[in-house]
Image 1 (cartoon, rainbow, N blue to C red):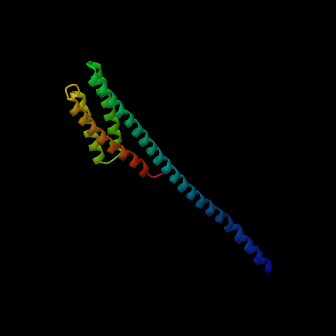
Image 2 (cartoon, rainbow, N blue to C red; image 1 turned 60 degrees about the horizontal axis):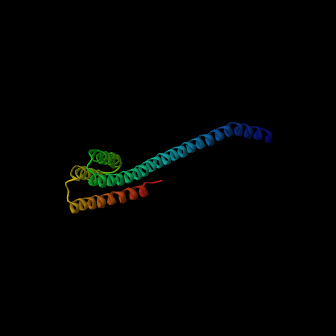
Image 3 (cartoon, helix red, strand yellow; image 1 turned 135 degrees about the horizontal axis):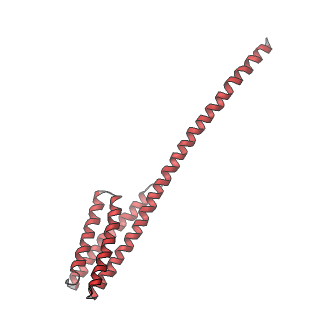
Length: 160
């Protein structure tokens, strides 16, 4: 009788043990898929954050190029200076549009108006009195600094 019970136990173990191993394997596979999905999400968020920060860096560079071009435009009489200033503003506007597309409508509006103000300064820079020119540059500097603060804040808020 003991032998029969032992044989039956052995048969049951031989039947259920592979199913237990298969179930563990399935659970491990599901968990691995979950971890891979989380890792992929992490990588995608990080790529977005890096791209956003790179563009923030580029728009800062573009803004300061705009200011240098404005000064050259005010100092010179050449048509080429106006073209260089307009190109610098266009690059700034393009980068601003890209950043704005990654954000909300309010930020898009700020970049749009700043770009339009810079374009007006290019068109009117030679005719503006020095005080008016400086007031407009100070206004654009203030608005740019607000948007730069938003750029830094947004990059810090983006989840890792």
